[in-house]
Length: 336
Image 1: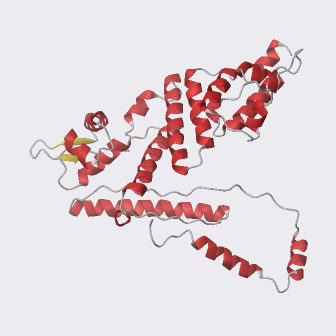
Image 2: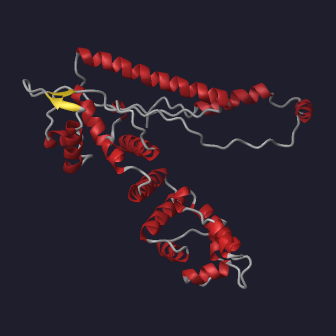
Image 3: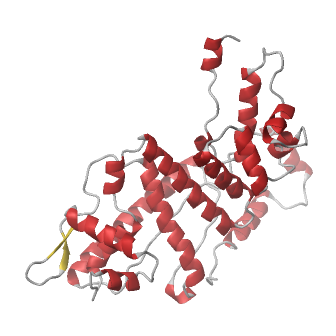
């Protein structure tokens, strides 16, 4: 393989992956393709040598899920992958994310992984830092909403107490100063009362997708904390697991968006009459938890024969009703 051909083969980018085993597999295939015409093509044994691992097929066992990576092995793999310091940290978070058994632990590592990748994009200029810093984080978002809350004093200590110490003094001061300097909120020169100047997201600038994800992640993470910290009487959490067609999914998305708009409009009207008592966060989540199943070998005719041969067994309608009953289990009447 000549130099031109080698330059046309691009290595897998770690930041594109949420499955470290798939990244390792693609890295191995990349190295195999890159060296296929060499006297000594790339192999699992060469990787182990680069990682200072005695087992020649250790990479293969990791890729196939037969083994997990320890913290020590993460560092050895990072060396063999030629990762720099930042990428090694990113790789470690990705490994822990994939290997975590507990959902809460997975969320923690997903948050850390997201923050590392965002910082890398800010550093490289892929995300405009000026736009990034202009868009408010969750602290500013909540402080902005507190304009409509009764009896709020907009000093750092009072805001920190009301936020139940979920934000630091620096975060609160930064968010408050940013809202004031950008003109989002202002202090009435006569009454000293904080008031809104305009809507928080009036700007027509294109917001980076990574920033939207970060804000949504922060707000959902606060919701996760609330699940463990708040009494059931102080919150409303429910889940609903459904099987939908593509058309039904789009219709459900539309209904959820309309619900969000309606709640926002009703709240805006109510706040013109009197201030609220507390700030609440509503997170509406709809996302896939399975892939689309591949068609099986049964044809329509085969299905008809199967139905005929199973006389005396539950009908399709019976099975559908049983499935609906099973799905209803996920609609918890009593919040835990």
